[in-house]
Amino acid sequence: MKLRKLTALFMTAAMALSLAACGAAPAATGTADAAPAAEAEAPASDDGGAAPAGSFSVDAITVNIWDNNQLAGLQEIADEWTATSGVKVNIDVIDWNNYWTLLEAGASGGEMPDVFWMHSNTAQMYMENDLILNLDDFIANDPNMDLGNYYEGIVELYNSDGHQYAIPKDHDTIALLYNQAIFDKYGVDTPTDDWTWEDVYEAAKAITEAGKADGVYGYAINTSNNQDGWYNIVYDYGAQVVTDDHKDTTIDSEEGKAGMEMMRKILTVAAPQDIVAETGTDSLFQSNLVGMITQGSWMINSFYTAESHDDYKWAMLPYADVNGNGSCDAGERWSCYNGLGWAAAADVEDPAACYSLIAHFCSKDMQVKQAELGVTMAGFKGVSEEFSNAFEGMDVSAFDRVEAEGSLYFRPYTRNTTVWEDAIGQTGAFLDAWQNPEDVELMATSCDNAAKIIRDAIANE
Image (cartoon, rainbow, N blue to C red; front, top):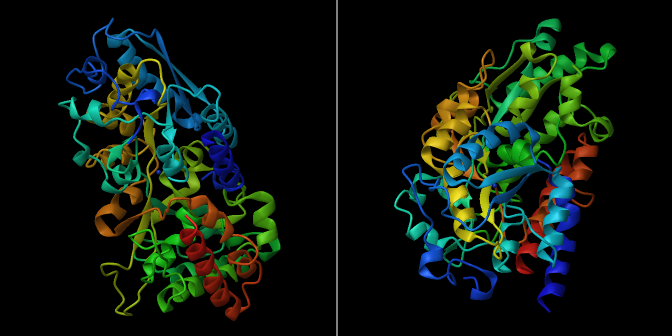
């Protein structure tokens, strides 16, 4: 019965996950609850993760991730744990779509990796079905592990029924990316941290008009750019895609429609959706055909290593001057943040070894090292500046500064996020307005349709 239930759940999520590329368990599954005291207490050292060689019953641990940009840094961190524990760590990079296909296959009766990344799209599904190792006892017995040191939204995300199933690996924020050369070519003033979304519209309009003969547009976005795009405008104008209690939405409110009206306005001077759908926003930008996009901190490396990287600059996300006083006040500049969690399979051969590795990845020293190596921003609070300093020659401090000069909200999620998240970006919701941005009423209608989709999905959870 459980296998049939899991298969149905995975089939429901599969299509949405393929588009998202983009943060109490029973004794029989090898959870911490069930482990004997000696097994549930992972040998610990000062860094919170490594343990003396010979402490564990396995010779190697398999780790799955989906981002090749992070491989070298994470392997370096893992190798430090290996040097102390004597357990080899093999990190396999699997592309986003296949990552979830293979994980689902393992969860449905195959073989899961020992340790892996967990994502907000699917966390609840894996936790509720006892597929992830319950870490409660390990955390309780680890004097170096304090979940209060991590971003609260990420800790909460990977907690189900009061039990912790993953520890925050990282967090991310969003910034505005622009091509200095395009702005200079068409004589348009470049973005600053004082820009509003109206300023984005005016600059995009100027570039699109001046660059028409060259096929250059001022801005590019599509409906799948939600966390790193239009979600933030909704919050800037005072609405929420999903309310804090995860039981409703206010996207169809006056504030939500005002935010999406701003998005519609920008779309009228942005790259048309047929071009965006065919090429993608990042590719358009790196082909010097788009002046501005919004993007997440997890993508910095892609632009830092790009051919035209000297022309790429970052500014804080624009704000919505809702009260019209000409300055950014509290609640007018929001950045979405998300975070991955380090998790282990519930039936892993050596739970203590897996927890020890996870705790090592998540220890303060290794979180700082992760940031300094430019792998990702840390899940450990207070070390974002180290990440900002990791990219010599490129100022990425906008991702750090938005935490102090703006407001953060956790990526909207419910029990089955993918059900509504995919649907609101398709025909019958926002895709209609994206494809016909000149139609003012259509965007307002799309907000109503999206709200119904979200509410219906929540009701069926």
